[in-house]
Amino acid sequence: MNNAFKTGASGLKAHQTRIDNIANNIANVQTTGFKKTDVEFEDLLYTQFDANDLSKVQGHGVKVQGTPIDFTAGSLMQSDQALDIAIVGDAFFALLDQNGVSYTRNGSFRISEENNVPYLVNANGQYVLDNKLNRIVIPTKEDRSINQDALLNTIGTFSFANNNGLIKADNTSFLATEASGAITALNAGDVELRPYTLEQANVDLGKSIVELLEGQRAFQLNARVVQTADQIEDIVNNLR
Image (tube, rainbow, N blue to C red; front, side):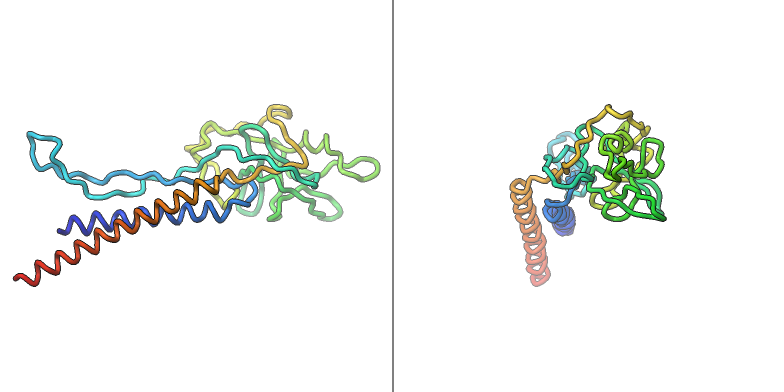
């Protein structure tokens, strides 16, 4: 009977993680550049009852194997801001703050004046970097308007040997790891930078709601397993 408790409890824990993950995806459906995460399950150990019949086994539940990030590109949405820039292609912008360099697909940028020098930053005040990881001073024309073409040629874009090796720094930025492999600074023109455009979250709201309902149902079924096991245990104890 202890196996029933453990199996049900493992299912509760695993599906709660899945529900929380899906809920976070849904909460960020309007977050620019957000990349959803999935949940992968793995069977726990099996007990074999008959050494001569490998089909006679008993499972011991499930666990979360990992929560991989889905780097599929989101849809593009037109904007009325010249500093809203989307990457068309497999690449990332680089950002700098006191914690170091991170990478993002969120191209919602703005100007930060420091000692009369206009730097390109994101909504959190992190500096946007060029392909040499230097801060970008916004180029201007004689009338002091933004030189859009020069800016697009200055913004750095970077690719990784293995995007799946990146880890989340927050909802829209990522940190490089050994698993993500070599970082390549791309040349201007290797990917398209499209101004007046933002990349939306890659969350399919309808599909996510269905997955959420499935996860809630699976959680309820595992809760029923634990409840039934407890009732049977109580009956057995009363028979003694």
